[in-house]
Image 1 (cartoon, rainbow, N blue to C red):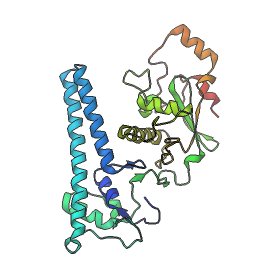
Image 2 (tube, one colour):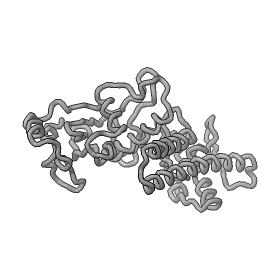
Image 3 (cartoon, rainbow, N blue to C red):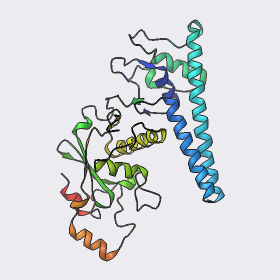
Image 4 (tube, one colour):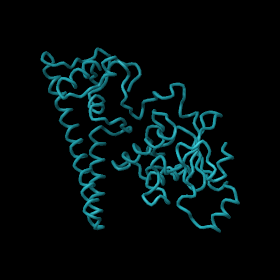
Length: 298
């Protein structure tokens, strides 16, 4: 959201908040994103049917499909409803902002009143004129750490998918791909999001093609959520997409897998893979079982 309009919001941002959608990558609309999540759910369900998964799993995947369809339809209907209300402003609770903008903006308090009156959707923080919590890719606002910028963040990936980060010179508690949604269901290989982050750490472009597809935008949205979970920073960790370079991190991303302690590597070769070996409790104060390379985190 544009920082110069703390008490106003675009129609799309208003609807995104009402359906609890908090991130829209540059170059995509809200409906692009809701449709992309729907398509992803449909593909997963279709593949599950081909793989003859148990009926219970298929039912759960179908529930996701139906929910994604409903959210996409809800977004369409809300956008249309607001446009219809603005065509008859005398009879509407919605109030157009006087902000000088080429895109129509609504007073946030009026949106909160309208959402509550028409749909029973509560947005109490907007009633108090607080800044919107819808994050667009150009939004540099950091709600959890207002004095932290992604350019001051360094993220390092270590052996066995341990991941650590620092803010300036201050090292933070390390984590693991598993805890931030970057591991596959078998928990021993990264999922698509983990692969993307690994590729970025090796200087590879994402997406590989010049124009991103909807599923790329969905992946970016999920990867953003993973990085937010790791760091607690809610602003966008990626620069707006560039045709030549794709989405580039605003932070420094380092692949440090090759610098792991040789003893850990030899021990792994002797003992074989143990699924619990690198298990980290998020409540643990120490990470004795993490690859010792994390101790050299810079």
